[in-house]
Amino acid sequence: MLICIPDVLDAAAVARCRTVMARAPWQDGRATAGAQSSAVKNNLQIPAEAPESAELGELILGALGRNALFISAALPKTILPPMFNRYGPGQTFGVHVDNALRVVPRTGERLRTDLSMTLFLTDPDDYDGGELVIETAYGAQEVKLPAGHMVLYPSTSLHQVRPVTRGERVSSFFWLQSLVRDEGARTMLFDLDQTIQELQAEHGPLFPAAVRLAGLYHNLIRRWAEV
Ligand code: NI
Image 1: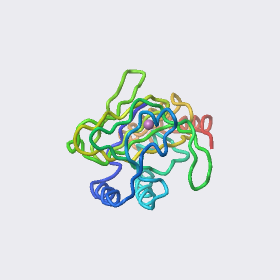
Image 2: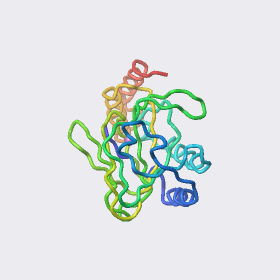
Image 3: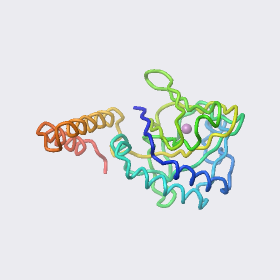
Image 4: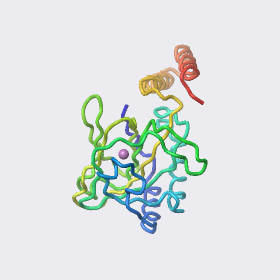
């Protein structure tokens, strides 16, 4: 499931990110790429250990913690600290798949990347190219979202960032391990949760069928969650 989550950050928070990023140190994006990715990656990143990464990461994770759509879709167990990249004219990230395992910097714990996220921090009018193209079972999906919006997609997908041809594309990218490993199970839980919310909005929170479905939802989480 590929899902766009609107308004993760409001305009003021996006502006804050851009201000802090403007004074951050930048390094070659290949610093964190595996061997295959290195060959096709050409962008800049803020080092994970830079204080700017930590400050903005906290801002983004705080916003995601309050975002019901994100929590319903991702069922996050552990989220890696957000990272930040930028692509100027001619820069690109060719077709690749993200590493399956990553290390959580503060704890040294290993995390399985179930879901990948890109939070757009530049308005689409400010640059040409730079589309995130994700291969799905239904063909390639092109994603280029307004600043403050985020796309969430399975880390198993092949994807690329098309070359930027004008302006600069700035974004945050990161990964999470979900409580529910299986993509199909997670997608069904999301559909069920959204259906329960629709029923509750229409008939009230105590509508008996919604209560029974909520019971079913939690029992499926009991069955499928790794905690
Ligand atoms: Ni990637």
